[in-house]
Length: 477
Ligand SMILES: [Zn+2]
Image 1 (tube, rainbow, N blue to C red):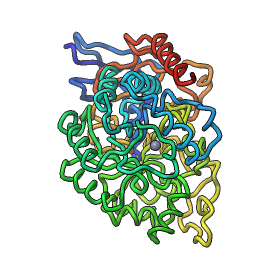
Image 2: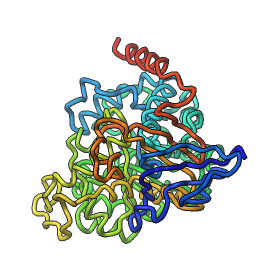
Image 3: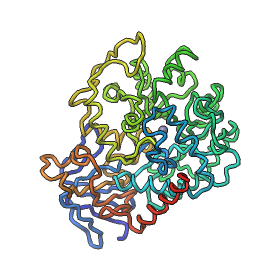
Image 4: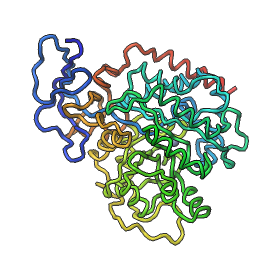
């Protein structure tokens, strides 16, 4: 049989499930037709391909729930390297959009970002692609789907954009960041749904409606139509929220409420909604997320890089909020791979013993919930859970994110053959606790081998580097 594969001899297997992280019994995995059909101590069947995983550690493939792939050619731009969110937006992503006026720059940027993610064991990528503008001469949605398909990655297009310019950051914006009308935005989302969206639990392609921010990228009266149209189409909603304290200040001063109360008024809460960042949530907002099932894409590296703060993830998990892990765009996270992100997620909450509000919130009540920080605030198992099953939950991809019979064969097999991982008493924690990028024996997506022996078969990495360097040189001139 050609579509059957046996992954044999792994030392450890983590399921992604928070309640049963370590597989009971054997660690061999049989894959047929892209799906896991058996886990245990298994013997090879005649004609079955055997992938030797001796000594390896097996995780579900990582699920990255928030990215901006076009930013993969905007790493370390000097004008924004030491800036907070607003001046960074005004000096990097907004003005540099003029260089994405043809399809090549987006295509190469997407390829760089996706290759980096695949080589970190990431099998599913949700890209918040907001680079759309009136008269755009190329099909940005098709470009990112094509690049993901070439690599064999599962891909969720969060179709972003704006229907109004943001005065604070778009003062000298190029035509490539001009807003669309609401009608054009909705038509763009629906067109992408018709072309690409698969509602199935193991979909390789999904589309999400994802205006860039619910407060600054569109008018307030457009939020309900956006939410209702997404639900009519049977797709999810995604956006940025409460990344910095500016969101809190804006909601309080303009609307007399919190950011979560604001989006709730406009029907932007529920198990079909997830927001990136959510750094500055008060207790009531955390409880509102838990009560409505509204999810979080936790981006600790980007939040640290931009000085935005530390999201209250241990408390969110304690309350049952759906939490996932994400790298955010590479213009605010030069280590946009899931292994680095997981390592940061493991450490940062331990380094944050504060149980008080994040940011200068005058007169705020101290947080009531207490699992705020300190050693043990986030375990490696917590990180693996949010980075795999947690991601599948917020994306609504019920057939992925955990290793169990009947689930999609999205499997990362780490070799742990670098000195970094020698001497580990519990190798299962190595890919997260060790930091850096662990070597991949293989990455499977829907049973297909996407990475083997730490390389992507058929990919010319030297050419990709040369293409990226050439495009960056063009921006520097
Ligand atoms: Zn973002």
